[in-house]
Image (tube, rainbow, N blue to C red):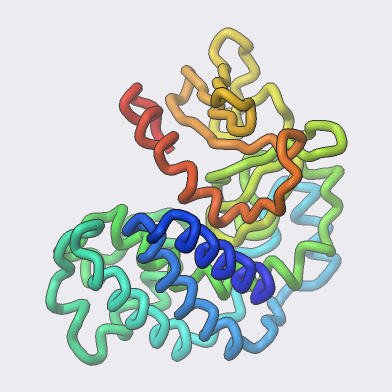
Length: 277
């Protein structure tokens, strides 16, 4: 986890030298990564409260390994990082607008209660105490940036306990999060999904929408860039889309978390066609 963060920071430095600077979004992302990296060093290796027997049972039933009650979180550290993440978002009003003053006051970390974390983790409505004055998408992004190092730590601990052959579902086998990126592997061109919450990777069918399960070839489509490196999968049934990179088309070391942002123009183009992420 820390090793990948270091690689991403190095890549951003290379891009900055090559281009004589970085787009504002990548400048923001670098700052966010740096504070996440400082917290990663302080996170004690999580020991989720779950047995191997329960893990196997849940995978067989199509249930993610982790429920909210299984998370091992240092809530003091979570709230500390929450304050730093807010400060980072607040430094870029050009990207995110002005944040409410309540989020910038001392003690703002206490707004991220266990109730709020549970609501975000289970994709339910956030409590009014934390969302008041902030758009739902923006607050979800702030909470995600806060919890990502912790969830990625859980994934590192648990990813080798899974029988992936028995998991062909459109949501993460670790935390249940939806995919927000994908790739085709070098060996066979198999499609792997990446969890938007914890960065877990798992294989999935090429001709199926991971969001609604549609397998109708007339509803599913994909387009590529001129080099065939990037793909954009769309589903007319549910109106959602998924970006992908074809590793067979490159010899470079691909850093998937960074690719999410390097391909952001694809998001803009597909949303103009009324597809949703």
